[in-house]
Image 1 (cartoon, rainbow, N blue to C red):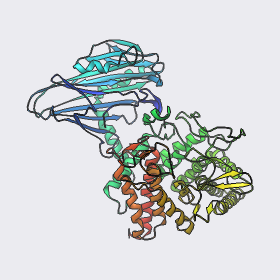
Image 2 (cartoon, rainbow, N blue to C red):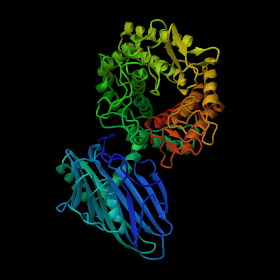
Image 3 (cartoon, rainbow, N blue to C red):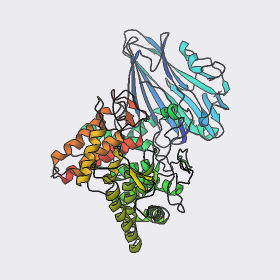
Amino acid sequence: MDYVLRDLYFPRVGQENHLAHRLSRTGVWSNGRFAWAGDRDWQTEIRYMEDTLVSDVRLLHKAWKLEVVFNDCVDLDRAMFVRRVTVNNRGTEDQDVRVFFHYAFQISGTGIGDTVLYDPDLRSLIAYKGAQYFLLGVQSGGKVGVEDWAAGVRDFNGKEGTWRDAEDGALSGNPVAQGTVDTTVGIRLGNVPPGGSATAHQWLVAGENKTQVKELDAMARERGPQSFLDRTRDWWRAWTSKEPAEFGDLSETSQRLYRRSLLTIRTMLDSGGAIVASTDSDIIGYSRDTYAYCWPRDGALAAVALSKAGYGELSRRFFWFCQSVFDPFAGYFLHKYTPAGHLASTWHAWVGPDGQPQLPIQEDETGLVIYALWKHYEYYRPIEFIKPLYRPLVRAGADFIRDYIDPETRLPLPSYDLWEERWGVHAFTVGAAWAGLDAAAKFAQTFRQDDISRGFLEAASAMKAAALTHLWDPQRECFSRSLYRRQGGYERDADIDASVLGLVLFGMLEPNDPRVRSTVAAVQDKLWCKSDAGGLARYENDLYQREPKSGTPGNPWFVTTLWLAQYYAMAASTPDDLAAARSLLEWAEDRAQATGLLPEQIHPESGAPLSVSPLAWSHAEYVATVQAYVAAWQSSGTSH
């Protein structure tokens, strides 16, 4: 665990990344000795201040007897990244301390044509390209202005970057560099006596031109950078406590992770409404792409969690975003979208292996957005908000789901599954499509369009009957995850997949239906990782990011494990029945990172995070599981 920057997004959450996963280091010099954060001599703790989005990072160098504390945040409503560093001398001798902040710029995601320079009038460093400007400022010992700096070139002609220049405790003062650039600023905290401390601040502001960053820099100087840390800390504590929440008999650990999950989802929400899957660019080394896109499915499930938690104004932004990218003439969402609303990269083909045209869609995404919108309406009844969304989004999407039907089976025609791997008819898609039709029928009834409502209900009823006929496998006594069209009919997929829980999670089937119970038993038996980490894999022989020697069906996922917890909460009728759901919540809590962040997957033995972290979907399912647990706890009579 280290303390480096990898991602810097502006002007949208998830777009564009101006570091593009290049490491921006932090270093400390004391009495002629130097060490980078992350070096093995540091004992490091990385956390957040409770119920905030302000970091609390503590580095202790045992040999030097020096503690360095960093508190960082992005201001609550301005493009300003503020960092406070406090050094505490735990030794018995004076220490002359300097701290160095390095920025490996990759403006607009490319290292071509960037410039970084020292501005003597502002006594600041400015990096820019086109309409992207970044200004670095410093305050130390009551003085404002950068005094130690270096502008340089990295990863070119053998040059590693200005961070190397810091290792002797002094920077060159080079005033300008162009091309693939980086910069380092140094702060001299001076002599720190035994038992003493010293504090300094460094900030980065972003804008579309020099005037904008000058104005933000002037604001930081006039008000003091600490004021922006303080107000942002206080704002997030007010934000997390704005709605009274019931937690039943859940522990304080559960309550803290619930609030942390809501805060984490909030960090993934762009001002334009897109909820991106993850802003962690670590995955770029695996696929040369990232998760910094809006999948309508992931966003819809996050929106449900936010709506029920009392943050409906945030869900509404997401639904407006959905309408902006939705084509009512087509009637379906495509794979995923950029935070700006453009069609994102995809691996879904418009033609199949047979060369015939096919729709490159995951139909569950269309169904779940309509479902999420109805859940939002149930909580808030915002009929004026719904009105402009009803015809171009709800009606158009439900019309597509109703018509995109195999006339022989009455199931949806093939599309990609939610794991984005298989083309067929999938149980999760059926559950989501049914939920979309059911929600659209309720909307139509609300608007007194009874004939339209009946049409959607009839299609939903036929789809449910078809699922019971075609997806149920009487020999294996469980629902099949998928059907594949073959000559003369469909072939059932015999692999067990946690996504079959979509048949019950969105309301199509009752949790205590014997067929559902039998299916859940098969899911738990086949997919529970019988390893030190535990948890539920996605499906049998899942190869994505898999540890090949683990002997498990796949890596444990938070999403799937929490689905199982939600099922047990939905099926519970007594307080004792809730024990299984509570134990799975505790599983997630025990495997969260020290920051409270939930990754997509974990290593099946060590429990270390795998793939991206955090994943908005993991946090959304944690929130949804707590909500389902508390609802079951209240209905069981325990709360009375």
